[in-house]
Every structure is written in C-alpha cells, then in structure tokens.
Image 1: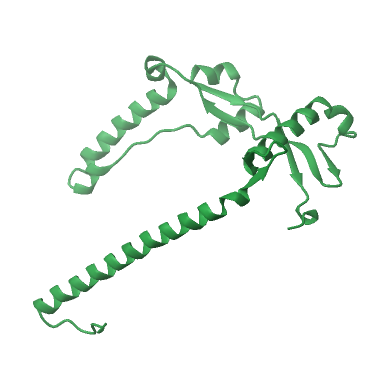
Image 2 (image 1 turned 90 degrees about the vertical axis):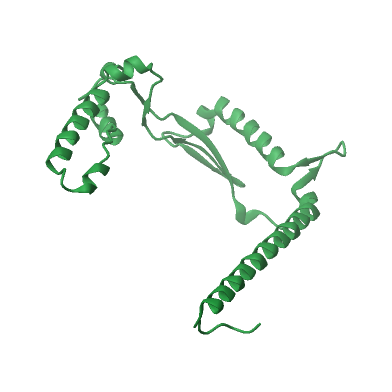
Length: 199
C-alpha cells in the first residue's frame, strides 16, 4: 500500500477518508477473526477447566472449589473456638490459612417512601441550596454559563460513621434521615498456600 504523506486537494482528502475507512474495516475484520479464534481455543481448552468425578461426570472446577470452600467454612464456623488460640483471628495450617476478617463498617441508605424522603434533612438542604443557586443565577445572569449550575446534596457517610462511633449521633437520628450504620461482622476466608501446589 502506498502511504499518504500529504493532502493537497479535495479529491486527495476524499481518497484519504476512503483509506481511513479501509483501515477501520480491516481492524473490524481482524477483531472478528480474533474473537472466533479465541472462542475456538476456549472451546478446545474447556476440558481442562473440568474435573472428572468417580461417577465419570465432568464438573467445572470452579463449582467444585466453591462447594468445598463452603464445606470448609461451615466446619470452621462450627469449630471456631477450638481452631483459634487466644485472640488470634486466623490459623496457619500446612496447606493454607483459615481465618476471619472484620468487614468494614458502613453507612447505608434505608428503603424509605418518597414522602419520608421529602421530609428529611437532605431534601430540605437541597431545596435551600436550589433557592440559593437561583439567586446566584440572577446575580450572574449576564454570564450565559451561569445557566449550567447544578446543585447536588449528599451525605458525607465517612463523617457520619465517625460521628456515630464517637456517639455524637444516634441510630434513631440516622434512621429518621433514612440511614443506618451497619457494623461489619467477621467474615470467613480460606487461602491455600499456592507455593505448595504443583502443575
């Protein structure tokens, strides 16, 4: 293909656009061919992502792993007191680690009716700010860009969580605003030691 180094006329401009279109079409065809090749390779290798059971049934390894992790979790939850020593939250075994991690505390929105939302502090603050923005638009009216002001009001949830932990705000006060603090519970995990695995 001859490269285009300069465009000096409308005809050459149109011809250059045609070449750009050819490039786009070539890339689209190459992507389609690549997608087909990847799908074929994925189908060819699908067998490697399954494990044969004693029954002869081939089951996806991901499914078997998920079931086994669930079984491990149920056993560990049942025997947590005997597995953990002192104030430890994990146990290092020969082939991996099991333990519990505390999930993060969070401030979440409760499901509330539109009427209750309208009565809340957030809605009132929004109304006041919209009114203030309208006044500001009048003052800045000569600037056309002032028509594109947007007012957004939202809760500062990290600060609410901090205030809740410092007992500066109560669960009842939060619930009246459609909010709730969810304290993170311990969540089970298990991690095999990958360095012991052989290919």
